[in-house]
Length: 197
Image (cartoon, rainbow, N blue to C red; front, side, top):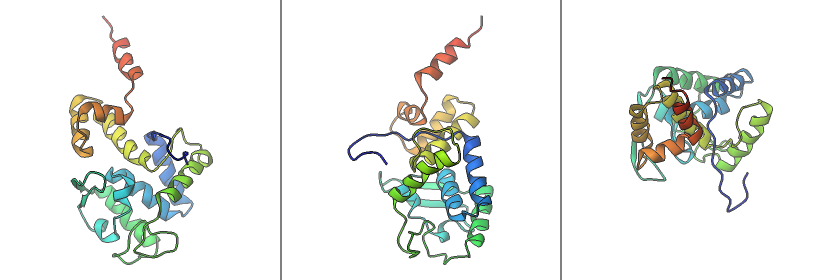
């Protein structure tokens, strides 16, 4: 955890490491944690919104409609078939809790109280070491940034993809989206260095 009043910026996790992490958690029967990672990545939502989701919001659904806590903006998030299959599988492996329960139930197991962000962040910091992940600042926001970086890379790193992400994240400008994705001056310099005449 960072010291009170300090500013830290979460990094994105390279997609191969994200996949490895999720599979390792499933293999280790840490289904709750795997569900958290998949839910956070596949929705691209902030933790403050992910922690409000209930099983009924994702099981047998093709989209999630949520009003973001931070911005008060409404998000409609499609649920892809692969993510839907994972949610169904993990739901069964977790003993089919009540569909009215929060997915990210607090440690005391009460279906109406979400886990704390501090609890998740402490675990993520340990995972970075335990699972030898290529990341410096690992926090709940990492999965949202990993989602953004995955979409950006898969979309060919072009302006059209940046516009899609800008709309998904509801940022005020493309510059904000670029900064958010961690597109650094070094990457921009590499574009110019790659020019062959």
